[in-house]
Length: 515
Image (cartoon, rainbow, N blue to C red; front, top):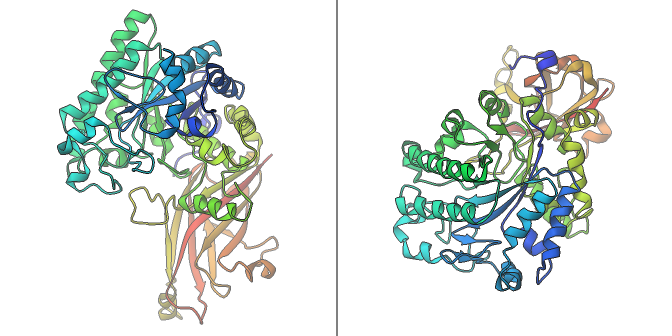
């Protein structure tokens, strides 16, 4: 377990910038901005973010070989219908990217140009591929067996042509626009053939070094440091599996900020402290990423409930946001990266700009610590074989208990989760476990070796257990909570005689009310 560090437990964030808002290539363009877009619309959008305490704006300007918010003689523009609304501005010689960065600087925000290093959105999003993609079939990962890429758009960074192409796009943006840096977004699960990814990681590192050198050259001429950031998967093991040697990028001083996250969903249980242990030995800032949903199942629930006119019921709540931010800051983060926020909050109530107001709280660790927090530890995806499943399972075999009748052995398993909570600052905490339990299944639960008594008075609430037999509730003594990693042991005490097979428990939630 990680040790509680008392006054040093919540390491103070470095620097003064806390909130990095990421605007993807198309969601704001299609969901917020009018058609056609005028210059004042873009300024109003930046003002909306600045008024919500955003410090840094990252606008994705490149994906699948297409440019967005800027037009180039060398690279193809748009590729999606919503980007036609910028054509009147572009035809008038006005680059929307220039308007965004100018207004950001006027409002005191740092502006980054974002580049999606690969993007598997299919034909329904990008009706056609770029000429580069069509003319380089040998560079496509799908021709070598890539999954999740039906239109064969993912590129193999093994090839010099691929690395050169995206480098030139970045170089053009930095040369033409007064951006404060660029961010590399690694949101897909392939950049090299899987079986060769780790051994070819040096090729991606060479590209990162080259980008660092290019930015350093422009820094000299502009009299300020241009930054390089990276958005990556939220564990070093996953990154290396993809051929991304993130640790080297940090230790060599190649990147200025790092945003680890699940590419689509919130991963409360990620090893953010491992990233902080590395970044705090350097000048690299740590901005872990958020998302609008806690899991794929939660995202499906929002679509399900939308048909019943209850949109947004499965979004991350304010208490969820505080819990995640508390985890980030407790693990040693310097701020928070807001990713795909619009997907969950741009259309459902309370809409923009009201939905942006949470940033005022999330940027301040002390404000976060004063609010109630709701942690969710569940699989990010329903398929436990998926690369980014990010889940745990306690499996209790009912038949094993019956076979061991009269003996001391009982089916038992451990579920580990991270909480950066200090017992002397917790007024009340409640633990919930959920799985394929029936009402007649009896389990004993220990948190860090402390037995948990069910229900408010030490007994299961029958009124609740009848309609929801798969759920168990436990008030948690604050002294049972450990700083960092917590160990939840679940033991099968009695099995439902009418049920067969195994019990799977893969969802744990914790509510914390601070003093």
